[in-house]
Amino acid sequence: MNEHDLSSEREIDLDAPQSFVGLQVNPSRKLAGLVGLVAGALAVTTGMVVAALGNVASPIDAVGSSFIDRTPRWLKELAIDWFGTNDKTALRVGIVIVLILVSLISGAFSSNRPSPLISAIVIFSFLGALSASERTGSTWVSIAAPCIGSIVGIAVALILLWQINNQWLLKHFPSESQAPIGWDRRRFIRTASSASVGAVVLGTLAQNGEQQRVDRIEAQIPDSLPTAIDTSDTYEGDAEPGELLYITPNADFYRIDTALSFPNVNLDTWKLRIHGMVENDIELTYQDILDMPQVERTITICCVSNDVGGPYIGNAVWQGVFLKDLLERAGVNSDAEQVFSRSLDGWTSGFPIEVALDGRDAMLAIGMNGEALPLEHGFPARLIVPGVYGYVSATKWIKEIVINKWSDAEGYWVPLGWSRDAPIKTQSRIDVPRKNQELQPGVNKIAGVAWAQHTGIEKVEVRIDKGDWNLTELSDDLTDDAWRLWTFDWNATSGKHTIQVRATDKSGYTQTETVTSVAPDGATGWHTRKVVVA
Ligand SMILES: Nc1nc2c(c(=O)[nH]1)N[C@H]1C(S)=C(S)[C@@H](COP(=O)(O)O)O[C@H]1N2
Ligand SMILES: [Mo]
Image (cartoon, rainbow, N blue to C red):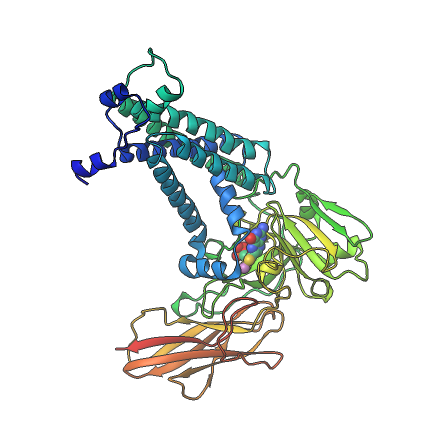
């Protein structure tokens, strides 16, 4: 943009007294846009610092969470498709981009009167406060944070706008002594840069505050758990080709949840409450759970958003207590229908009561692969239910279990278009050869995993270039609740090939070739991988 363009953007308020117009250097919209940006940044970072001081989620995360709460099925699918487990970062970046655009544009329209920018700040802080007010775990600070942010933002906006153009002030408050007419470039730059530095400092402080909050939660995670007295068989297979692992290490375990920031966990006050259609309400402290005889089970959990061949599945050794033992203590009414549970951050899930009582190893887990449950995976405690998808069962950061009827409550994702009943679909995946792995002619190992939790895997077959199906070799049949590894020796010839896999579970069902998307209750189809042999 050259000088000429700039001058054409200048607006002269014809209502204003001529003498002012004469003296005034009319501000460009660009300058006012910059004011919007600085004021907006200060408003947001002030809100973040207040939230951090109050030990609550930042206004941005509150807005983000409220957005997630309204995510329709197609949008969730799209987000996971595009961003995978980076969907949280993508959402935050999206919010920041919107804020930047709104600040810039409303600022640009405020060169002659401050109302567009001020309205934008008021509207967005109101959105922040509204979002905070609907979030579980919010306190009055959550609502005050965006409000205080907006006051600071508006103050800075007025000062800066006045510095670039005091005409509107003079118009509304005419006074001969009104200090300098037109704009003082140096003074503006000084104020604007101090405000920008302020925003950066506040943003950093807020970030540190959030990190300290997470550190304080994690400091409560015990270094070790009591030894389990009832353990499952451990896998003793050889190292598999392509470093395929039977147990997924905690650090590599997929993480899927709606929590933009971890809920506050305070072990001193945390209790798991079991109530609803039961004889006795139960309240368990973390110590109460530690004091119960510990069991360990190897269970594979899977996300409904896992596409055919996708990564949102993991197998871990979970430690804790059986859910059926807890429910037995509580005494479930015979007409109960649903095991509904709620997390510290208000997320909910529900699955049929039969699933909890049919003898399967549904657990209240406090440990994962020999460690106390990591915060990302639900510290202090979560549910792990073999045979149903995570979204209807695997509540992390759990705070209560309510035994009720289907008509009493719906789990989080159900009103958003996902099925109420969500048994795991029998599936298999090719892991080796890895994507883009170079293959030589001759015998190559093909390998992967297959799962049908609580039904069990009977056989896994592969075929090359749509030829005959070949039986693969399976890892030991340790439990029906976890995946099995499969391997196949493939005598490969040079050229391009297509590998396909399908599993048959112990009910006799063989995976359908029909491809369906993950919504509303899990994907179907055969995993297919194209490879090139040198
Ligand atoms: N509190 C809470 N628990 C939750 C969720 C959530 O959003 N919030 N997501 C569920 C879903 S959809 C899945 S697939 C599993 C994933 O567990 P993981 O992150 O430990 O792998 O957690 C479940 N538990
Ligand atoms: Mo999920």
